[in-house]
Length: 230
Image 1 (cartoon, rainbow, N blue to C red):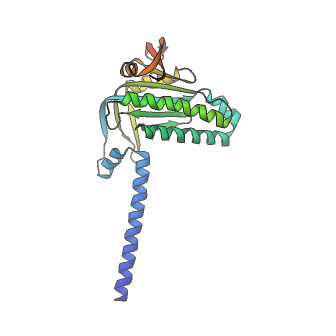
Image 2 (spheres, rainbow, N blue to C red; image 1 turned 30 degrees about the vertical axis):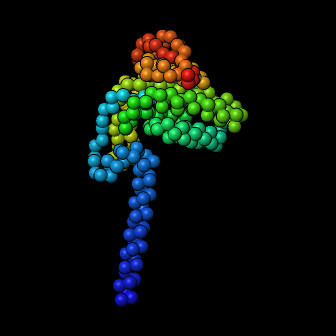
Image 3 (cartoon, rainbow, N blue to C red; image 1 turned 120 degrees about the horizontal axis):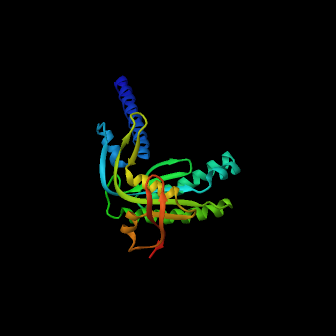
């Protein structure tokens, strides 16, 4: 009886440890992938790829980051990026966007993926405005100017999970490329939007036309600055 009790206790302990490890694994997967995508992978689906008819994409980047990082040094740069991305993560979560990836000071997010939503352009606009406000607060905290460039575009995108051992959820397509160009051809401390996004939000937000600008790989495009809410 004592042996049976001992082995039963050992079995229960092993089961509890297994459940705890599984919970940790699930939490890690959810930190990497959208919840619906993580669920599909857990259910055994090997290939995840889809076309999303209408979504909005945001790119954000600190203007002049390379000379700034050389001036600050490694430790302060890491602190700055940690504070910046943590703040952006909170904004993105609040407005229901999906964080896609970060590269250095660059930050990419999207709305309408993987779950479609009709207000995707509005939610990206809201997030962008708050990102600009947040960098102003961060500038005061660090006591030097942190000037953000933000680019936004909307359209049909493809999305899927890339990789077998190290997963990443990514989106691609021409609207993504244009959103990236909106940021890289933008102006410091401003949000530049392409025409597709402008048409979706123009009745609810204050915008200012920038006019035709020459976009690398696209030619001349009409763009606007997003100023604020009406």
